[in-house]
Image (cartoon, rainbow, N blue to C red; front, side, top):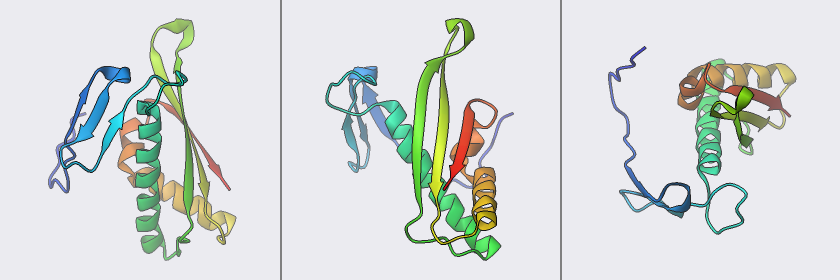
Length: 141
């Protein structure tokens, strides 16, 4: 399936060199990172950490939009803790990701939390991009 954007809202432009032991930067200067392999102990971050932060931020935004539509006030201290696991598939055939999003929505009922998470998972661009491609688990606190 090819998705064609009817209206581009924003385009991030980045430049990365050296792979997992390189550097990455955004064209607007807002981001510059040193990269290091996961678990290496070397200074820097890795793609899995960046992915977790990006998805978490996007998911909170999707919950805020859902909250307005569902007339549920999303608490100011909403939080998402992402666990992004890098591993291999059965038989070590390929590398793959697994993600757990632990969502904290203090002060809401269990039903309100469930509604927000389900609605956000349907509209969050990260959720849409990964749907059916990786295992995603939600833990709602």
